[in-house]
Length: 209
View 1 (tube, one colour):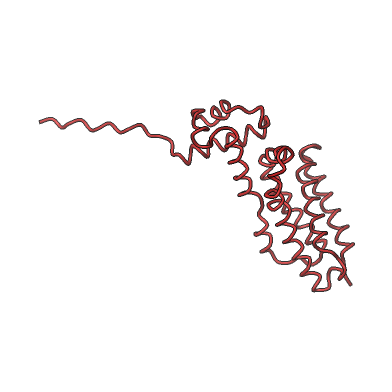
View 2 (cartoon, rainbow, N blue to C red; view 1 turned 60 degrees about the vertical axis):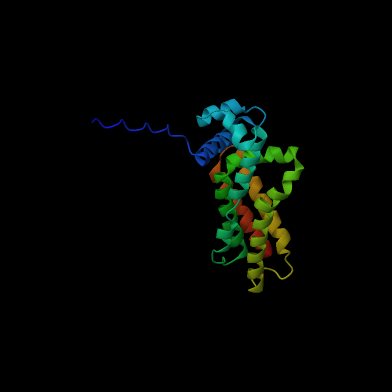
């Protein structure tokens, strides 16, 4: 008696998580290149190699995809905890310089996400608290704590307001390492030179003893 033919396996479907990730990556790419308004769900789906209806199924539409992009941004927003684990620098200038170089690399890594998020922050101020906590506040607190440690060692002036100094440093980081890169071209050598000059001048002003 001949063996019965083997049952035909059902066609393999893309894993839901993989499909969501592909759409998220496509959304990040097109939102950053074209802007939120110009990027269409059809183009996003085509870039991901998926059906346009999956954007509605997984994200509820283009606005939901943008929300997912922002959530992904918050997950990737900083690596300040890793910076906080580094040994303390020998001086305020060295500490500030190292922090700025650290943020320079990180802002470069998340530049495509920043290009999406910043315009939406201008349109929707309700997003600002999450952005502030992720990109400015947490990093500023860590830097201020490290400057306070140097102050306790007599390496930073006793009257220095380290919290305000740290805020100034973090916003300078955004200005040089994101905005200057975006609007003045990717002139890394010049930007890094400006970072070093800024850190040296800040360090000289903060030096104790």
